[in-house]
Image (cartoon, rainbow, N blue to C red; front, side):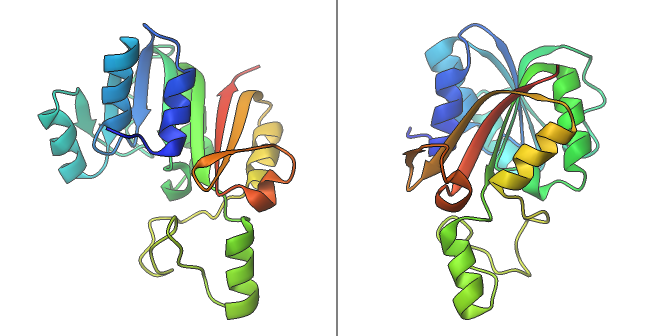
Length: 196
């Protein structure tokens, strides 16, 4: 099974044999890949009942839960990695979710769509409406995205919180892009973070 580009990038950087909590794991595609390729002990938390059922049907240990309220039950330092892929912008309290991730895991992967990508900017400039693209396919009134974060915003957010960026990768058109001009040219970003 082919992984989404941000998930493939995360999978590439997870150390084999580690413990992972995939928050907002969807149908468990990343967890399945990590378990088969890297012998990772992967667990999942997912809000959508249909996705939980799909992941459990694959034999994956996934529980239904909400990242905004259900991370408090996990013990401190119980995972090597906490992963939040394409979910940060849908949480009510991104800062609280990130705090919990770095309490639960030694390292945290966060991936998100970059709302400062040139296509988004152009759509707003010329059409005057919130964009609907292949990567952001919902209308403004139907989107799960409640926080429109950019790479620049996230870098500032991480800096204000005193976190260390262990790695940052930028994706456009499904392939990696350089850090220069990423806020304009990258459609997605992946950050690997740790506490100071």
